[in-house]
Amino acid sequence: MRRTLLTSCLPLVFMLSITTLHAQRIVVDEMLAVIPAAPSNVIVLLSDTRPGLDEHERTLEEAITEAKLIVDAIRRHMTVDNEVLEAMIASIQKRFGKTHDQLEAFFLERGFTFEDGCELLRNRKMIEDLISTMVRPPEPTRDDIMAYYQDHIVYEDARYTIRLATIERDLVPSIDDIIHRNAWSELDIAWDDEETYTEQELHTATRFVTDMQPGQIIVMGDTDDSYDLVQLVNRTERRALPINEDAIARTLKQEWFFRDMAVYQEKISQQIPVYYCVSQLPSGTPDPTPKP
Image (cartoon, rainbow, N blue to C red; front, side, top):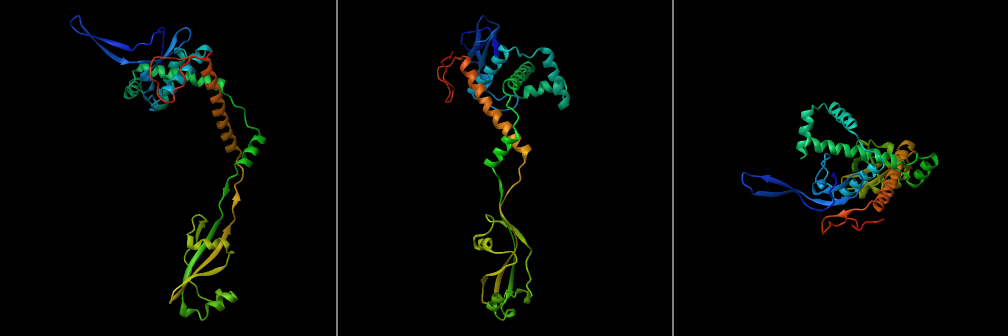
């Protein structure tokens, strides 16, 4: 992204000189759009859609949106002077323990000269300052928080603690009598370790434990030699999780920020014209017709 006095939409070329009078014209970048601004226009280049310092490849629409934010920052006299930029660079070097040469190498690894990297940092600072000024959602009130909680109650699933056992048939004179009298304590049952499950985690064949009461034992299967037993040791009913006001406040502020940011972006999209320099725009690019 560049600020320039150019208004024509032409490829940027680098003239490679040779020993003869002839020169080879090499296209090194291409202007995709021009956004009028004072004191100089802002142009969007093909290179602006490549991955930035964050290594995120941007679409043309994203690059144009960023350019419009820069134009609005310029209009509001929210530019970043060299003194502030130098302080930013010094802070980055200190924070990450990088020398000037290491920072320059960091930029080069991502395809930028040191000057290009500094310009990206300058633009980022301008955009951050602009957004923090123009998009300022209010602090959520307690009524806001309670209303959000009621609309987004999170439940903790019911949990069932069970244990299993197998008992030999010849140790049980009459299983029906044991069941009728609920006389399981008369048997020497070697229970397996307790396991706790939610209803979704229960196997289909053991889903019936959700209808059992704590302490209840059921014969869930039998063979010629043994009985398979299951006991519901404990159950915790489904319950609403307690309100976390701080977390909800953060969520609301984030949602409101994105809402207000979308409104602000739509506003500058209507106010700031864009003149495209390409005949066929990528899918999803906004209508190129300038709006008043």
